[in-house]
Amino acid sequence: MGFLSIGLKLLPYIVSCVHAVESFLKGGSRGEEKENAAVGMVHAILQTVEVGIDRDLLNDTDVNKATREVMQAIVALQNVIASKSQRSD
Image 1 (cartoon, one colour):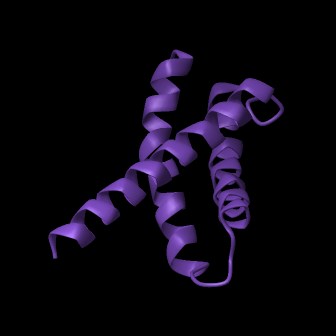
Image 2: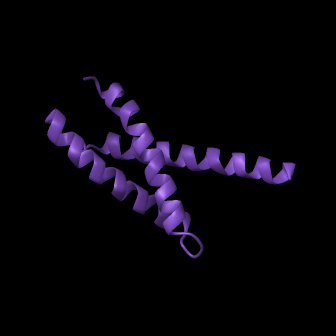
């Protein structure tokens, strides 16, 4: 299974992690705290994937960077959608 294929399969889990963190850490938590919590959740998922594909993904700088970038893009998109829907109300 190629790395891109694995990444695409992880995308729904990354989105779920972002949503979970947003719902649990509302209010006083900053963006970086939320991002770190979501990355921690994704790392737990990657640990399971590592066993299945016999590769070390968690100690890969590129994987960690890409995970954060995907999360930041998801949150940015959610923020844009939320701001657009608030203007419509």
